[in-house]
Image (tube, rainbow, N blue to C red; front, side, top):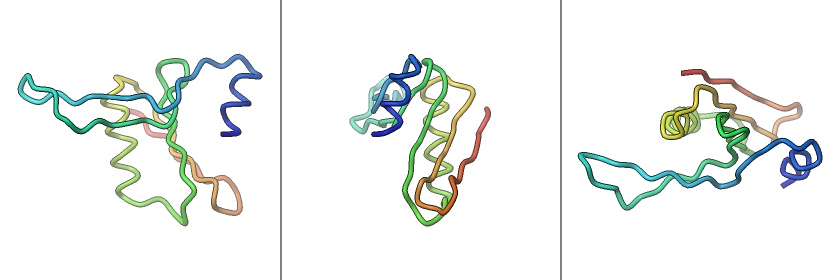
Length: 90
């Protein structure tokens, strides 16, 4: 992923495909979530190559923000003519 190269060259700490478990009533559920990139341990970056954002994509970034205890999430789309992005804050 080109973003990884840029982050490494600029010494920006990140973790790719960060795994999150979900606990419900004291039990860990079998399904796990994987955020595309976590930047500086507190920004969720979800990367898409789609025609347009859907409610499902928005729900996904909001869930990842909550699971990661982050305050900020960025949803970016590289398939449009110019970069499409949305910032979400909880």
